[in-house]
Length: 50
Image (cartoon, rainbow, N blue to C red; front, side, top):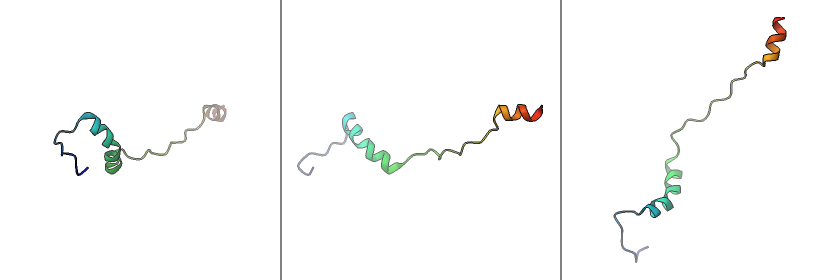
């Protein structure tokens, strides 16, 4: 606020309060997950070979 003095060093509590907005602005470095590979069921493989 304008009437409060500016603090150069942030306290852990102030960092925790602003972390949500910081992470929302930065985003995530993770890639989206790949689609699941469909693997044939074991029963279908055993009946097809007999």
